[in-house]
Length: 116
Image 1 (cartoon, rainbow, N blue to C red):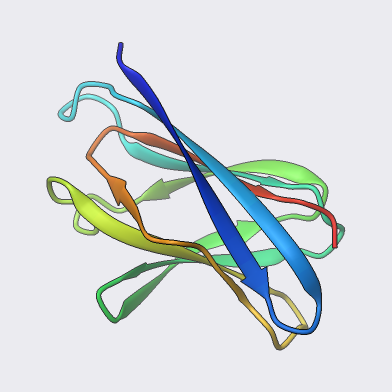
Image 2 (tube, helix red, strand yellow):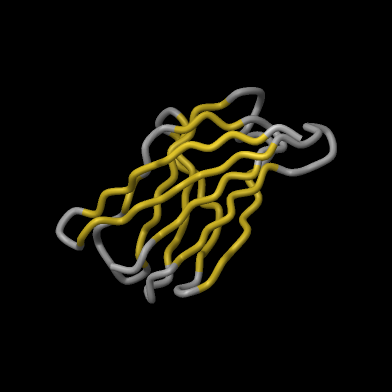
């Protein structure tokens, strides 16, 4: 199994810095789903979106102070796909946006949201 790592940065305007890191694990594209592992170390629940081109797709909710696995829809990740992830605090007005990252079917992407 091949593993590669990338560091992402999330920015929250007016709230403070938020950081994320991502690691990939290649699996069989036909066998395993593409997963976003969100480690939300803050206390605020976050709605997580994937952004491809200008299309935003809701992936689910990452509860505060918990780790959450969210499956990326197969239609979103077709071959090598460039994505951004958005963490939108529930009840807040300033979402965080990650840098672009390339994802392949079967990858596991880790996203860390530190406490604010």
